[in-house]
Image 1 (tube, rainbow, N blue to C red):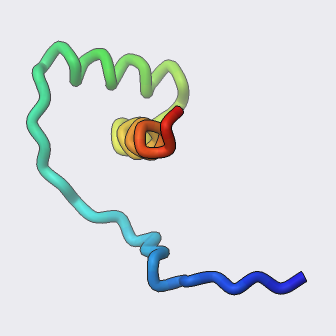
Image 2: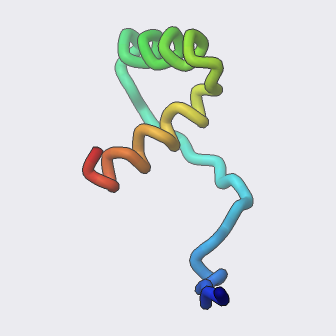
Image 3: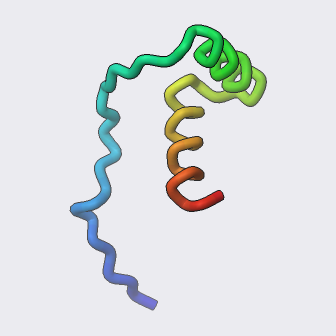
Length: 55
């Protein structure tokens, strides 16, 4: 089976962003990420994907 993929939408290179969050929320994110063996960025990326996918 062959599948046609639009690779123009795939950009594996990470982009640096600057966001502002309350300190207590950032602490909670860091604690959760560490407990689940994720980086802060990995957790935020996963959470964003799940939010956009309706999970």
